[in-house]
Image (cartoon, rainbow, N blue to C red; front, side, top):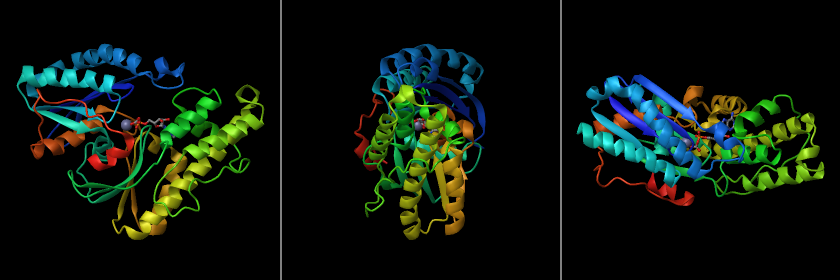
Length: 337
Ligand code: KG4
Ligand code: ZN
């Protein structure tokens, strides 16, 4: 069995995965959403202190499995430096005390492997990763060969949902709130621009759309003046523009990529409106859509453990004395994959 730890942002999570059959034996996650909600986003120092309390508590429940561990895995990039360090300190300690190998896991690769929890991997695969930190289309050929085909030049999809919710004082995280309000909204009331609609650029951009939402809120007198229906209509119109943007750029990629298996992963892949649009698109292009169970779309240690099983089989170990966080600029993350 492999014990895996995730602490790259505001979720403390530990999982135990069976190496032979990829089955998830144990999984627990403590989210800090409530603690960060009043700030409208994640406060790194607060997140770090909460990990220092929650991770040891979760580990207590793993005690019966410790003698059976063959390796320990931990997210070491990308993420918030001070929160990654909490998971790394725990993983290093377990590796040394138990005298077992350590696996450093790239968080985004973990998101991709959320598709294969309890299952065999399906490769090659085209993946749209939409999370709070990233928006990318990735061609996944093997554990080591992953190529970024398109990436966001500014905000990520999840971030744009969070900021839209924040501008209307709706709380954090914004994704599920906006999706729910949009169900009662008129998606045609606001004609928000579809980002990069007339650009040949194979990239994503969400910051201009965010600005258009801000102007619409201001034109209605500001957040405090919005009626419930205004909030629903803004949410629906915003979500529609995001969908059209993702679909337009994905069509360009689908036109040239012959890989039949397509997946959406990351926190924002829980959005049913976006999932349904991709279901339709995949049908049009003869591709099969794969998604992770809703509970594994947002950050969790089960996906880190599933990736770690494959890394373990290939012997991709890290020296516990050498492991550290890898700090990267957003634009460079693609290069690291
Ligand atoms: O993958 P994740 O848990 O963390 C990162 O790796 O960044 O993604 C979190 C993001 C947040 O921005 C959140 O608002 C967004 O995923 N999200 C959603 C939905 N559920 C979560 N965005 C749109 N619709 C949703 N239903
Ligand atoms: Zn994530």
